Length: 116
Length: 110
Image (cartoon, rainbow over all chains, first blue to last red; front, side):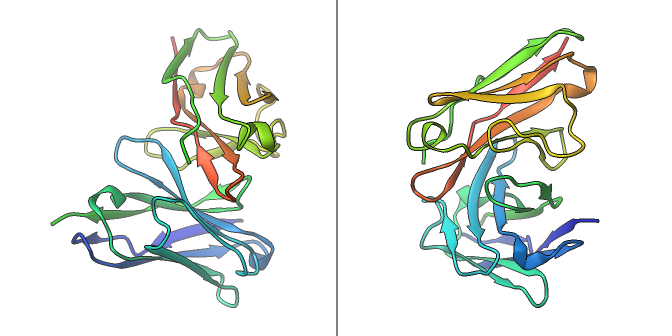
């Protein structure tokens, strides 16, 4: 069974940093890209970042480019989203999902709150 | 990276068919056949309904279908059921090597 599990969400001050983790199981991990998608409270989905199966290609939304980085550890089936210079507008539930063009499995999300 | 344009809400009665539109530009929907649709029930993670414009993943009901014309993609739900009441989002790959979602459409089944 394909499973994705996010962790690392927390309350952080503006300007602070946080690292989110996404653990995967149930499929050949390095065959798939992984995406991060966020959803602010009461709002719609916003694509944030993605990484290819090999980890050699990384993609970012304009709203986070230069502040967020993405990486993966294929030996441990993990993807990480390093978030720096956090802003109030980064407050959201962050989902990781398998795939990029077609995100076919999603985790349950981890909550990031940026507030003083 | 402007969000794709979806109607804020649509409604229909059980058994009817409804269509949700998703309008972009030649730099996203019009330029690529990488359009997906997602269903999200309150408090739940999104679920993939359609990918590559019109392909249904295994396990998704035949009542959900997708299409595209120029810069607009559409999701049609046939034979509306109460359980279809949810939020629906479109997504597309873009010429900037990014992905973009629509603003979401709330479907009410009356």
